[in-house]
Image 1 (spheres, rainbow, N blue to C red):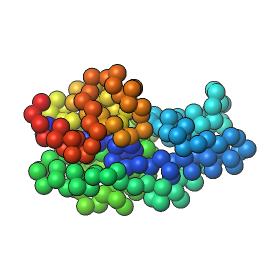
Image 2 (image 1 turned 30 degrees about the vertical axis):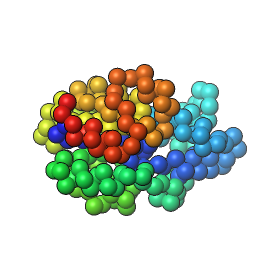
Image 3 (image 1 turned 45 degrees about the horizontal axis):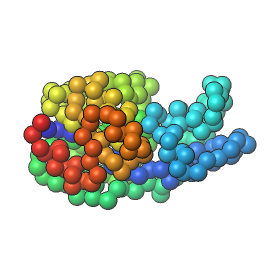
Length: 216
C-alpha cells in the first residue's frame, strides 16, 4: 500500500472508558437506565448520536435523543482524554510507518472536535495528511465521502490506499471508496462479525504494519 487511513476508536485508541462514562452520566441525568461497558461497546460505530439512541433503547423520539446527545457531548468533553489510551504497539507502528515514508490520515465517526482533541493530545508527533471526524457537512461512515476527500488530499488513487478499522462499518467504507480494507481484532467488534467480511484480519500492530507494507 502507498498510504493508510485509520479509524480512531477501537483501532488506534481504546476510548471505551470515557465514552461509557459520558453516556451513562447523560442517561442517568434523565433518569434512564445505565449500561455496563461491554454493552456500551456494542453501541459504538455509527456516530455519537446513534450511540445515544442505542443507549436509550427502543425507538426514542428525536427530541429526547437530541437532548441526551447534547448532554453526552458535554460529559464526554470532561472524560475525553482521561478515558482514552493508545493500544499497545500503536506508537511504535506509526513511527515506523512514518519513517518508511507512508502518508497517513484518520477518518472517524467521532465528532470532529473530539477527534482533533485526541489526535492533538496523543498523536501530535505524527504528520497526518488529514484528521477528519464527524461533521455535518460530511456523511458518517460507511459513506465514502470522507475517505475519498482524504485520498484527494493525499493525491493517491483510492485503490492504492489501505483503510484500517475495527468494524464492519470500516469494511463497508473501504469497499464504497474503492480502498483496501484491513481490520484489527483488538477493537470493539466481535471477531465473528469481522470474520464474515473478506478483509484481512490482524491480531497485532506488528502484523498490521507487515500487512500495510506488503504488496497487494
